[in-house]
Length: 434
Image (cartoon, rainbow, N blue to C red; front, side):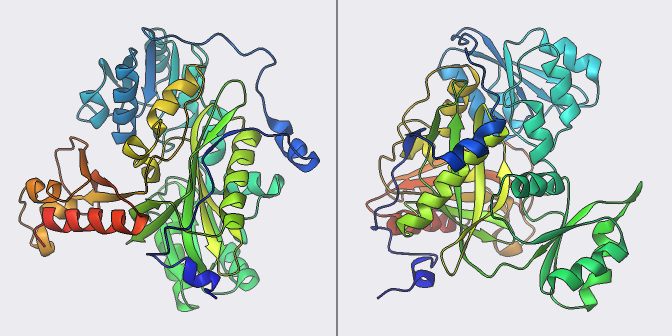
Protein backbone atom coordinates (compact mmCIF):
# COMPACT_ATOMS: atom_id res chain seq x y z
CA UNK A 1 0.00 0.00 0.00
CA UNK A 2 1.36 3.43 -0.94
CA UNK A 3 2.29 5.62 2.02
CA UNK A 4 0.94 9.14 2.37
CA UNK A 5 4.44 10.65 2.13
CA UNK A 6 5.00 8.82 -1.15
CA UNK A 7 1.73 10.18 -2.53
CA UNK A 8 3.06 13.70 -1.90
CA UNK A 9 6.23 13.15 -3.93
CA UNK A 10 6.99 15.89 -6.50
CA UNK A 11 5.72 13.73 -9.38
CA UNK A 12 2.88 11.79 -7.77
CA UNK A 13 0.24 9.54 -9.25
CA UNK A 14 -1.69 12.36 -10.86
CA UNK A 15 -4.33 10.07 -12.35
CA UNK A 16 -5.87 9.91 -8.86
CA UNK A 17 -9.12 11.87 -8.91
CA UNK A 18 -8.76 15.22 -7.14
CA UNK A 19 -11.61 16.97 -5.36
CA UNK A 20 -13.97 18.68 -7.76
CA UNK A 21 -13.79 22.42 -8.25
CA UNK A 22 -17.08 23.71 -6.99
CA UNK A 23 -19.49 26.53 -6.43
CA UNK A 24 -20.08 27.01 -2.73
CA UNK A 25 -21.71 27.21 -0.13
CA UNK A 26 -23.53 24.02 0.83
CA UNK A 27 -25.50 24.00 4.06
CA UNK A 28 -23.00 24.99 6.77
CA UNK A 29 -22.45 23.08 9.97
CA UNK A 30 -22.92 24.80 13.30
CA UNK A 31 -19.15 25.19 13.68
CA UNK A 32 -18.87 26.67 10.22
CA UNK A 33 -21.66 29.15 10.97
CA UNK A 34 -19.70 30.35 13.99
CA UNK A 35 -16.55 30.85 11.95
CA UNK A 36 -18.40 32.78 9.28
CA UNK A 37 -19.85 35.25 11.77
CA UNK A 38 -17.24 37.82 10.66
CA UNK A 39 -18.69 37.86 7.14
CA UNK A 40 -19.81 41.37 6.22
CA UNK A 41 -21.85 40.61 3.08
CA UNK A 42 -24.87 42.97 3.08
CA UNK A 43 -28.38 41.54 3.16
CA UNK A 44 -29.05 43.12 -0.23
CA UNK A 45 -25.93 43.22 -2.39
CA UNK A 46 -25.26 46.44 -4.33
CA UNK A 47 -26.12 46.42 -8.03
CA UNK A 48 -23.56 44.88 -10.35
CA UNK A 49 -21.08 47.01 -12.28
CA UNK A 50 -21.68 46.35 -15.99
CA UNK A 51 -19.18 46.28 -18.86
CA UNK A 52 -18.32 49.79 -19.99
CA UNK A 53 -17.51 50.86 -16.43
CA UNK A 54 -13.97 51.75 -15.33
CA UNK A 55 -12.09 49.41 -13.02
CA UNK A 56 -9.05 50.45 -11.01
CA UNK A 57 -6.15 48.18 -10.14
CA UNK A 58 -3.82 49.15 -7.28
CA UNK A 59 -0.37 47.95 -8.31
CA UNK A 60 1.34 47.68 -11.67
CA UNK A 61 2.72 44.14 -11.79
CA UNK A 62 1.91 41.12 -13.93
CA UNK A 63 -1.15 40.17 -11.86
CA UNK A 64 -2.58 43.58 -12.61
CA UNK A 65 -1.72 43.17 -16.28
CA UNK A 66 -3.55 39.84 -16.53
CA UNK A 67 -6.53 41.26 -14.62
CA UNK A 68 -6.62 44.19 -17.04
CA UNK A 69 -6.49 41.88 -20.05
CA UNK A 70 -9.42 39.85 -18.71
CA UNK A 71 -11.43 42.98 -17.87
CA UNK A 72 -10.89 44.63 -21.25
CA UNK A 73 -11.89 41.44 -23.03
CA UNK A 74 -15.18 41.69 -21.12
CA UNK A 75 -15.70 45.30 -22.22
CA UNK A 76 -14.42 47.22 -19.18
CA UNK A 77 -12.00 50.13 -19.10
CA UNK A 78 -9.05 49.64 -16.76
CA UNK A 79 -6.90 52.26 -15.06
CA UNK A 80 -3.80 51.09 -13.18
CA UNK A 81 -2.29 52.88 -10.18
CA UNK A 82 1.46 52.40 -9.79
CA UNK A 83 4.47 54.08 -8.25
CA UNK A 84 6.56 53.38 -11.37
CA UNK A 85 6.00 54.21 -15.04
CA UNK A 86 7.51 51.12 -16.65
CA UNK A 87 5.24 48.37 -15.35
CA UNK A 88 3.44 45.37 -16.91
CA UNK A 89 -0.05 46.66 -16.08
CA UNK A 90 0.57 49.80 -18.14
CA UNK A 91 0.74 47.70 -21.31
CA UNK A 92 -2.78 46.31 -20.83
CA UNK A 93 -4.58 49.25 -19.22
CA UNK A 94 -6.42 52.16 -20.80
CA UNK A 95 -4.65 54.58 -18.49
CA UNK A 96 -1.79 54.54 -15.98
CA UNK A 97 -1.72 56.82 -12.93
CA UNK A 98 1.79 57.21 -11.50
CA UNK A 99 2.24 58.54 -7.99
CA UNK A 100 3.09 57.65 -4.43
CA UNK A 101 0.95 55.09 -2.59
CA UNK A 102 1.36 57.37 0.43
CA UNK A 103 -0.19 60.39 -1.32
CA UNK A 104 -3.82 60.40 -0.18
CA UNK A 105 -4.76 63.41 -2.33
CA UNK A 106 -3.38 61.72 -5.47
CA UNK A 107 -5.30 58.53 -4.70
CA UNK A 108 -8.56 60.35 -3.97
CA UNK A 109 -8.24 62.27 -7.24
CA UNK A 110 -7.69 59.04 -9.20
CA UNK A 111 -10.57 57.29 -7.41
CA UNK A 112 -13.08 59.82 -8.71
CA UNK A 113 -12.69 58.41 -12.23
CA UNK A 114 -13.26 54.78 -11.15
CA UNK A 115 -16.30 52.61 -10.44
CA UNK A 116 -14.50 50.01 -8.29
CA UNK A 117 -10.90 49.25 -7.28
CA UNK A 118 -9.12 46.00 -6.54
CA UNK A 119 -5.44 45.27 -5.87
CA UNK A 120 -2.89 42.93 -7.37
CA UNK A 121 -0.25 42.99 -4.66
CA UNK A 122 -0.46 43.12 -0.88
CA UNK A 123 2.78 45.00 -0.32
CA UNK A 124 1.14 48.39 -0.66
CA UNK A 125 0.10 50.45 2.36
CA UNK A 126 -3.34 49.57 3.68
CA UNK A 127 -3.78 53.33 4.05
CA UNK A 128 -3.68 53.58 0.25
CA UNK A 129 -6.65 51.23 0.04
CA UNK A 130 -8.49 53.24 2.68
CA UNK A 131 -7.84 56.50 0.83
CA UNK A 132 -9.40 54.99 -2.28
CA UNK A 133 -12.26 53.42 -0.29
CA UNK A 134 -13.29 56.84 0.98
CA UNK A 135 -14.31 57.66 -2.61
CA UNK A 136 -15.04 54.38 -4.40
CA UNK A 137 -15.69 50.72 -3.43
CA UNK A 138 -12.47 48.77 -2.89
CA UNK A 139 -12.75 44.97 -3.15
CA UNK A 140 -11.51 43.15 -1.18
CA UNK A 141 -11.95 45.72 1.59
CA UNK A 142 -8.72 47.41 2.78
CA UNK A 143 -9.20 45.66 6.15
CA UNK A 144 -8.46 42.37 4.35
CA UNK A 145 -5.25 43.87 3.00
CA UNK A 146 -4.35 45.16 6.47
CA UNK A 147 -4.74 41.69 8.02
CA UNK A 148 -2.98 39.64 5.37
CA UNK A 149 -0.05 41.90 4.52
CA UNK A 150 1.45 41.43 7.99
CA UNK A 151 2.43 37.94 9.18
CA UNK A 152 1.85 38.75 12.85
CA UNK A 153 -1.68 40.02 12.19
CA UNK A 154 -2.37 37.15 9.81
CA UNK A 155 -1.26 34.56 12.39
CA UNK A 156 -3.43 36.24 15.03
CA UNK A 157 -6.41 36.03 12.65
CA UNK A 158 -5.77 32.32 12.01
CA UNK A 159 -5.47 31.52 15.72
CA UNK A 160 -8.55 33.59 16.60
CA UNK A 161 -10.67 31.69 14.07
CA UNK A 162 -9.26 28.27 14.87
CA UNK A 163 -7.38 27.61 11.61
CA UNK A 164 -4.38 25.31 12.00
CA UNK A 165 -0.99 26.87 11.24
CA UNK A 166 2.65 26.42 12.28
CA UNK A 167 3.55 27.11 15.92
CA UNK A 168 4.94 30.63 16.09
CA UNK A 169 5.94 33.58 18.25
CA UNK A 170 5.97 37.30 17.49
CA UNK A 171 9.44 38.74 18.06
CA UNK A 172 10.24 42.41 18.70
CA UNK A 173 13.74 42.23 20.21
CA UNK A 174 16.81 40.05 20.39
CA UNK A 175 15.69 38.84 23.83
CA UNK A 176 12.26 37.99 22.40
CA UNK A 177 13.95 35.91 19.71
CA UNK A 178 16.02 33.92 22.19
CA UNK A 179 12.90 33.30 24.31
CA UNK A 180 10.96 32.19 21.23
CA UNK A 181 13.75 29.79 20.27
CA UNK A 182 13.59 28.28 23.75
CA UNK A 183 9.83 27.80 23.34
CA UNK A 184 9.76 26.45 19.79
CA UNK A 185 13.15 24.81 19.50
CA UNK A 186 15.40 24.54 16.45
CA UNK A 187 15.38 24.36 13.52
CA UNK A 188 12.97 27.24 12.94
CA UNK A 189 12.31 29.96 10.38
CA UNK A 190 12.54 33.67 11.19
CA UNK A 191 10.47 35.97 8.96
CA UNK A 192 9.82 39.68 8.78
CA UNK A 193 6.23 40.47 9.68
CA UNK A 194 5.82 42.76 6.66
CA UNK A 195 7.00 42.99 3.07
CA UNK A 196 8.23 39.46 2.57
CA UNK A 197 7.53 37.34 -0.52
CA UNK A 198 9.35 34.77 -2.69
CA UNK A 199 11.66 33.94 0.19
CA UNK A 200 12.63 37.55 0.86
CA UNK A 201 12.85 38.63 4.48
CA UNK A 202 13.37 35.22 6.05
CA UNK A 203 16.13 33.02 7.37
CA UNK A 204 16.39 29.42 8.55
CA UNK A 205 17.78 28.97 12.05
CA UNK A 206 19.44 25.57 11.91
CA UNK A 207 21.37 25.86 15.15
CA UNK A 208 22.10 28.20 18.08
CA UNK A 209 24.80 30.00 16.11
CA UNK A 210 22.24 31.26 13.61
CA UNK A 211 20.03 33.08 16.11
CA UNK A 212 21.97 36.31 16.66
CA UNK A 213 23.13 36.43 13.04
CA UNK A 214 19.53 36.22 11.83
CA UNK A 215 18.47 38.99 14.19
CA UNK A 216 21.31 41.21 12.94
CA UNK A 217 20.14 40.75 9.34
CA UNK A 218 16.36 40.84 9.76
CA UNK A 219 15.69 42.55 13.08
CA UNK A 220 17.65 45.75 12.72
CA UNK A 221 15.62 48.27 10.72
CA UNK A 222 16.54 51.86 9.84
CA UNK A 223 13.90 53.15 12.27
CA UNK A 224 14.57 50.65 15.05
CA UNK A 225 13.87 46.94 15.56
CA UNK A 226 11.53 45.30 13.06
CA UNK A 227 8.67 43.08 14.13
CA UNK A 228 9.44 39.48 13.19
CA UNK A 229 7.69 36.12 13.40
CA UNK A 230 9.50 32.94 14.40
CA UNK A 231 7.85 29.79 13.06
CA UNK A 232 8.53 26.31 14.30
CA UNK A 233 9.99 24.01 11.67
CA UNK A 234 7.42 21.98 9.71
CA UNK A 235 8.77 18.77 8.17
CA UNK A 236 6.11 18.82 5.47
CA UNK A 237 5.50 16.26 2.75
CA UNK A 238 4.48 18.80 0.11
CA UNK A 239 2.94 22.22 -0.44
CA UNK A 240 -0.39 23.01 -2.05
CA UNK A 241 -2.47 26.12 -2.66
CA UNK A 242 -6.15 26.79 -3.21
CA UNK A 243 -7.42 29.75 -5.23
CA UNK A 244 -11.04 30.80 -4.74
CA UNK A 245 -13.31 33.65 -5.76
CA UNK A 246 -16.00 35.06 -3.49
CA UNK A 247 -18.78 37.33 -4.69
CA UNK A 248 -20.83 40.10 -3.14
CA UNK A 249 -23.56 37.56 -2.39
CA UNK A 250 -21.17 35.37 -0.38
CA UNK A 251 -21.07 32.57 -2.94
CA UNK A 252 -17.66 31.03 -3.56
CA UNK A 253 -16.19 29.36 -6.65
CA UNK A 254 -13.15 27.27 -5.73
CA UNK A 255 -10.50 25.94 -8.08
CA UNK A 256 -8.91 22.55 -7.58
CA UNK A 257 -5.88 22.64 -5.27
CA UNK A 258 -2.52 22.97 -7.00
CA UNK A 259 0.57 21.05 -5.93
CA UNK A 260 3.54 23.42 -5.79
CA UNK A 261 7.28 22.90 -6.05
CA UNK A 262 9.67 25.70 -5.12
CA UNK A 263 13.28 26.44 -6.03
CA UNK A 264 15.30 28.94 -3.99
CA UNK A 265 12.08 29.96 -2.16
CA UNK A 266 10.38 30.97 -5.45
CA UNK A 267 7.48 29.02 -6.92
CA UNK A 268 8.90 26.84 -9.69
CA UNK A 269 6.12 24.55 -10.92
CA UNK A 270 2.41 24.21 -10.06
CA UNK A 271 0.24 21.35 -11.27
CA UNK A 272 -3.32 20.05 -11.10
CA UNK A 273 -4.73 17.64 -10.15
CA UNK A 274 -2.58 17.56 -7.03
CA UNK A 275 -2.70 13.76 -6.77
CA UNK A 276 -3.35 13.71 -3.01
CA UNK A 277 -5.92 11.83 -0.92
CA UNK A 278 -9.46 13.20 -0.97
CA UNK A 279 -9.54 14.05 2.77
CA UNK A 280 -6.43 16.23 2.39
CA UNK A 281 -7.79 18.11 -0.61
CA UNK A 282 -11.23 18.46 0.96
CA UNK A 283 -9.76 19.92 4.14
CA UNK A 284 -7.73 22.46 2.16
CA UNK A 285 -10.75 23.52 0.10
CA UNK A 286 -13.02 23.85 3.15
CA UNK A 287 -10.40 25.81 5.08
CA UNK A 288 -9.92 28.18 2.14
CA UNK A 289 -13.64 28.84 1.82
CA UNK A 290 -13.98 29.46 5.55
CA UNK A 291 -11.00 31.84 5.56
CA UNK A 292 -12.47 33.90 2.73
CA UNK A 293 -15.79 34.06 4.57
CA UNK A 294 -14.20 34.99 7.89
CA UNK A 295 -12.22 37.78 6.22
CA UNK A 296 -15.25 38.96 4.25
CA UNK A 297 -13.34 38.75 0.97
CA UNK A 298 -15.02 40.02 -2.18
CA UNK A 299 -12.67 39.13 -5.00
CA UNK A 300 -10.08 36.38 -5.42
CA UNK A 301 -7.73 35.05 -2.75
CA UNK A 302 -5.33 32.15 -2.36
CA UNK A 303 -4.41 30.12 0.70
CA UNK A 304 -1.07 28.31 0.73
CA UNK A 305 -0.77 25.15 2.81
CA UNK A 306 1.83 22.78 4.17
CA UNK A 307 0.72 19.15 3.99
CA UNK A 308 2.30 17.19 6.83
CA UNK A 309 3.46 13.60 6.51
CA UNK A 310 0.47 12.41 8.54
CA UNK A 311 -2.01 14.16 6.22
CA UNK A 312 -2.80 17.38 8.10
CA UNK A 313 -3.07 20.71 6.27
CA UNK A 314 -1.52 23.77 7.94
CA UNK A 315 -2.09 27.28 6.64
CA UNK A 316 1.17 28.86 5.53
CA UNK A 317 0.06 32.19 4.03
CA UNK A 318 -2.99 34.00 2.71
CA UNK A 319 -2.71 36.07 -0.48
CA UNK A 320 -5.73 38.40 -0.82
CA UNK A 321 -5.51 38.48 -4.62
CA UNK A 322 -4.87 36.27 -7.63
CA UNK A 323 -1.89 33.95 -7.27
CA UNK A 324 1.06 32.64 -9.26
CA UNK A 325 -0.14 29.05 -8.81
CA UNK A 326 -3.45 30.03 -10.41
CA UNK A 327 -1.96 31.15 -13.73
CA UNK A 328 -2.68 27.74 -15.24
CA UNK A 329 -6.41 28.47 -14.89
CA UNK A 330 -6.14 30.70 -17.99
CA UNK A 331 -5.89 27.64 -20.22
CA UNK A 332 -6.97 24.84 -17.90
CA UNK A 333 -10.33 25.99 -16.49
CA UNK A 334 -13.72 27.14 -17.70
CA UNK A 335 -13.07 30.52 -16.05
CA UNK A 336 -9.62 31.90 -15.23
CA UNK A 337 -8.74 33.35 -11.84
CA UNK A 338 -8.48 36.77 -13.51
CA UNK A 339 -11.95 36.65 -15.05
CA UNK A 340 -13.25 35.50 -11.65
CA UNK A 341 -11.61 38.54 -10.08
CA UNK A 342 -13.42 40.80 -12.55
CA UNK A 343 -16.73 39.04 -11.98
CA UNK A 344 -16.40 39.12 -8.18
CA UNK A 345 -15.42 42.76 -7.75
CA UNK A 346 -18.11 43.84 -10.25
CA UNK A 347 -20.86 41.88 -8.48
CA UNK A 348 -21.43 39.55 -11.43
CA UNK A 349 -22.22 35.82 -11.13
CA UNK A 350 -19.05 33.79 -10.68
CA UNK A 351 -17.99 31.50 -13.50
CA UNK A 352 -17.41 27.77 -13.33
CA UNK A 353 -13.96 26.84 -11.97
CA UNK A 354 -14.15 23.40 -13.64
CA UNK A 355 -10.80 21.91 -14.67
CA UNK A 356 -10.78 21.07 -18.38
CA UNK A 357 -7.61 18.95 -18.39
CA UNK A 358 -4.59 18.18 -16.21
CA UNK A 359 -2.19 21.11 -16.38
CA UNK A 360 1.11 22.50 -15.16
CA UNK A 361 2.66 25.95 -14.97
CA UNK A 362 6.39 26.74 -14.80
CA UNK A 363 7.71 30.18 -13.94
CA UNK A 364 10.17 31.76 -16.36
CA UNK A 365 12.72 33.76 -14.38
CA UNK A 366 15.32 36.23 -15.54
CA UNK A 367 17.86 33.43 -15.23
CA UNK A 368 16.60 32.09 -18.58
CA UNK A 369 18.24 35.10 -20.24
CA UNK A 370 21.60 34.21 -18.62
CA UNK A 371 22.25 30.51 -19.34
CA UNK A 372 24.41 28.72 -16.76
CA UNK A 373 24.94 31.96 -14.87
CA UNK A 374 27.08 33.32 -17.69
CA UNK A 375 26.20 36.92 -16.94
CA UNK A 376 25.68 37.45 -20.67
CA UNK A 377 22.12 38.35 -21.63
CA UNK A 378 20.69 36.34 -24.50
CA UNK A 379 17.08 36.07 -25.65
CA UNK A 380 15.67 32.64 -24.79
CA UNK A 381 14.85 30.26 -27.63
CA UNK A 382 11.08 30.64 -27.58
CA UNK A 383 10.65 28.72 -30.84
CA UNK A 384 12.21 25.65 -29.24
CA UNK A 385 10.00 26.01 -26.18
CA UNK A 386 6.83 26.37 -28.22
CA UNK A 387 7.68 23.29 -30.27
CA UNK A 388 6.81 21.21 -27.19
CA UNK A 389 3.21 19.96 -27.67
CA UNK A 390 0.54 21.74 -25.65
CA UNK A 391 2.79 24.50 -24.32
CA UNK A 392 1.66 28.14 -24.10
CA UNK A 393 3.93 31.11 -23.38
CA UNK A 394 3.02 34.20 -21.33
CA UNK A 395 5.59 37.01 -21.09
CA UNK A 396 4.93 39.99 -18.84
CA UNK A 397 6.74 42.72 -20.80
CA UNK A 398 9.36 43.42 -18.15
CA UNK A 399 12.42 45.08 -19.65
CA UNK A 400 15.15 43.95 -17.24
CA UNK A 401 15.67 40.17 -16.87
CA UNK A 402 17.35 39.84 -13.48
CA UNK A 403 18.08 36.46 -11.84
CA UNK A 404 15.11 35.41 -9.72
CA UNK A 405 12.77 37.94 -11.32
CA UNK A 406 9.51 36.55 -12.71
CA UNK A 407 9.49 37.44 -16.40
CA UNK A 408 6.71 35.13 -17.55
CA UNK A 409 5.38 31.60 -17.34
CA UNK A 410 4.76 28.51 -19.44
CA UNK A 411 1.60 26.42 -19.24
CA UNK A 412 0.89 22.97 -20.65
CA UNK A 413 -2.22 20.80 -20.75
CA UNK A 414 -1.83 17.04 -21.08
CA UNK A 415 -3.48 13.71 -20.29
CA UNK A 416 -1.91 13.66 -16.81
CA UNK A 417 -0.37 16.20 -14.46
CA UNK A 418 2.93 14.32 -14.65
CA UNK A 419 3.03 14.72 -18.42
CA UNK A 420 2.12 18.41 -18.17
CA UNK A 421 4.95 18.94 -15.66
CA UNK A 422 7.42 17.23 -17.97
CA UNK A 423 6.32 19.43 -20.88
CA UNK A 424 6.70 22.78 -19.12
CA UNK A 425 10.05 21.79 -17.66
CA UNK A 426 11.28 20.65 -21.07
CA UNK A 427 10.03 23.83 -22.72
CA UNK A 428 11.76 26.01 -20.14
CA UNK A 429 14.99 24.05 -20.45
CA UNK A 430 14.93 24.42 -24.24
CA UNK A 431 14.15 28.13 -23.97
CA UNK A 432 17.12 28.71 -21.68
CA UNK A 433 19.40 26.76 -24.06
CA UNK A 434 20.55 24.65 -21.11
